[in-house]
Image (cartoon, rainbow, N blue to C red; front, top):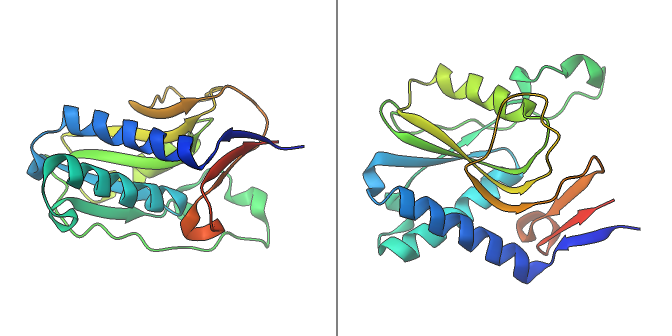
Length: 176
């Protein structure tokens, strides 16, 4: 039986909290960019940008945005055998040198996805800083990686499923 960690309202509240904290730390819109890790991190990043735009009274299009696919940088590709994951777009349409990058993902667990994302990002340049924002931090890290912005901490080794309205028709986070 799956347990709901975040319902739709709590999901939205968590994203608003993350967005508010990011904006408080990064008031100068031209100094930072938001980059979502494919695929749910991209949807969350877009929503964070929307919230930051409301807080800062700028247009969403004025906030730099990129997408990152880490598939080819994963350290577990051999585990997939013939069921290789689908490679999605990496689009960084701006110079990330000397920018504060807000890297967005849905769940932080071992840290291996973020490690791969850092490898991909540094292929595009040298940011001033990289700050991690996640909807759910489930603990049990294997690498020394921590999120600066967290919607909810829920320590578990069980599977966490994030449903986004863009993909699943509703927002919720489940543990099973």
